[in-house]
Amino acid sequence: MENKDKALKFEILKKDSKTGARLGILHLPHGDVETPVFMPVGTQATVKSMTPEELKDNVKSHIILSNTYHLYLRPGHELIKEAGGLHKFMNWDRNILTDSGGFQVFSLGDLRKITEEGVEFRSHIDGSKHFISPEKSMEIQNALGSDIMMCFDECAPYPSKYEYVEKSMQMTTRWAARCKKYHKNTNNQALFGIVQGGFYKDLRKKSAEDLIKLDFPGYAIGGISVGEPKEEFLEILKYTAPLLPEKKPRYLMGVGTPDYLIEAAIAGVDMCDCVLPTRMARNGSAMTHYGKVNLFNACHIHDFTTLDKDCDCYTCKNYTKAYIHHLFKTNEILGARLLSTHNLRFLVKLMEDLRQAIKDDRVLEFREEFYKKYGYTK
RNA sequence: GGGUAGGUGCCCGAGUGGCUAAAGGGGGCAGACUGUAAAUCUGUUAGCUUACGCUUACGAUGGUUCGAAUCCAUCUCUACCCA
Image 1: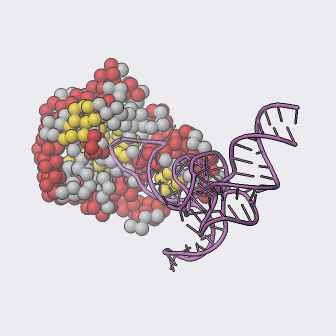
Image 2 (image 1 turned 135 degrees about the horizontal axis):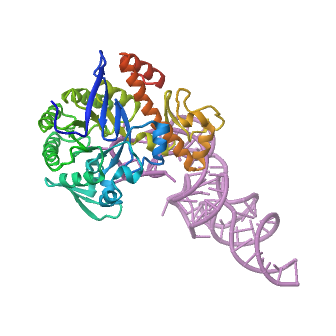
Image 3 (image 1 turned 90 degrees about the horizontal axis):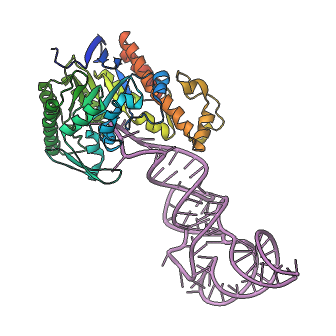
């Protein structure tokens, strides 16, 4: 089953006996990554408000995301190539996964026009017109030099009609073949395929089967967590993950609440990413073992306790809720930084704990304990 | 002492006869955020009531009018200018 891609080797160390969860290591050009893993998102060559040192020392992250579309627009992939690649440009010597720009096809709404050839965008910055094809996305990601690249795909909105999703999924598969064909730097960059098919099981199955024929070193589940109810999310997640090759890494795109991460791992997913921890942080909310905490709320004015007594992060070791509340009330940027540190560490640590639970073969117990504390009724 | 401009809801501020419980900011209180068009967005912010609604409200008092934050008179306070 070894394919010719040298950039990635995936090793599965252990499987949980009662769930689909697995413990693994991604061997990548910029070091090993233990899985299941949560990957912080740094769209514009920066995980907002965090330095790479903080990501290493405080968050303890080994892989982050960045974005093709954004970096293509600014500063331009040629400039990043000139800088010596994205790692050097942003001073991050661990792994980087780049999204293909496919999600922008979804999120930019009426700023774009999709054809078989590719997608015509109007820049969200200045309105200028741009065209990204599967080949162009590969060219950009090659120039960026990320360790894992993503195929250019279309992420269908929720809800969407069957006929639309079917056509969209088929095009995504054709685009995947074109990506695969164009991408030559397989020794240094692993290219993942993305399963689409919305919330229709037969389409998910078809998408997975066709992509597997193309033989990618890893597979992502896209088009999920786009506003659907949790039951539908779980249904499609549990259905889709096992369709993907057992021995290859599975990446669930765009998932970042603690419960979704746990459910994803249990379904057999190895990698997740999300903007949620950093965005929530900038907007004043913290994820904690005891549920969500909004630091803007007046109940923290005199609260000189720490954010989360079970957290080992820099913020929780050094600061009180009263202080962080004050920082947000006064619009001080340090508030966003401290909460970003905490939220990212919280999710990275959640995955560390989950990995330990897999080692100890007690994933379901771990989930129950976590949910009980967090306040989930499930 | 004289003159001028003003006093609007927690604050700033629009409003010059009915569509005004009163625009818009700010502040306060809450909510949302899931491959980042997000340090963003949404709701709410006189009192009573589940609600219909009722009661108090635009410095004070009195008046004109079917009807006044808006017009008139007096008083009062503030700012600036002149003595």
